[in-house]
Length: 91
Image: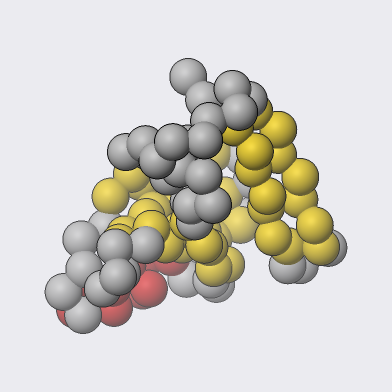
C-alpha cells in the first residue's frame, strides 16, 4: 500500500497531482511512487474512451489497468519513453 501526501493543483477542468511518499525515500526504487524526483504518470481526459483505446492499440501500445469507478472509466499505457499515461473519460 502506498502512503504519502497528494495535492491537486488546478481546477475541475485541468490539474497537476503532486505526490510525496510518506517514508522520506531518498534512494531510487523500482516504483515511480517511491523514486525521488520520479514522474509517476500523466493523464488526459477524453470524450470517447473506447475510440481512444483503439487508436492507442493501432499505434502499437498496450492498454492495461482498465477500471470503472466514480466518476468515470480509465486505462493506462506506457509511451515510447516508458512513462505511464492515464486515459480517462468522466461520466
